[in-house]
Image (cartoon, rainbow over all chains, first blue to last red; front, side, top):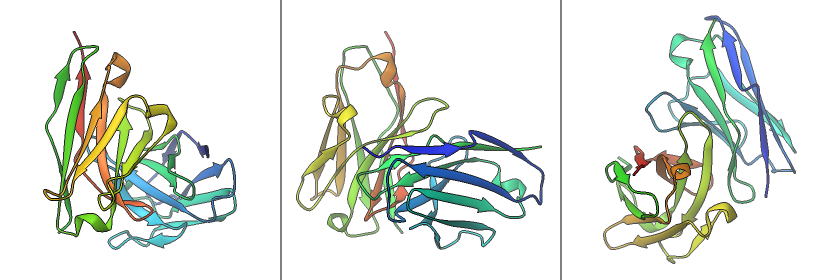
Length: 106
Length: 116
């Protein structure tokens, strides 16, 4: 089974900051990684698929990059509505989620 | 528009089973597989498995193979998950979601509480 190591578990940012979350897979996942945003009491929302493809409605301040085993997700100019938890998901070989990152306001 | 509507919250006793549903609308049900995902309180997401509505064939995360049973009724566009021999560790929110790869549309979740 593929393991996804996501870091950091929590992140504190000021409005307008740029933040970056990383996920490392236990093996090459061929760019089959997605990123989700989850707010309390809500289902996860797909933001990015296939490493860097933004879903319709995802603001351009969100971005993703990476290859092989190492991937990153960034939010430039953090806004108050971005305060949430974020998860990566590999779907190259079955499906595995990362442990999550909770983004809070500093 | 695409919707996945899940059944309501459940309070069940230890050792019992629970069966939840996920009714799809707004797309051709057999064109996408349906996944089930567990989220324990305050924790991350765990992939339980998926079922292919076209073939009816399931595929399980090894961890949940003896715990979950996935079925589907393609005539009513509804997927089901039965969770058996429940313990307190099974108290969680359970989501269904569809995919062709990344899980794109999700149900609203079902909260299952296991308590005597």
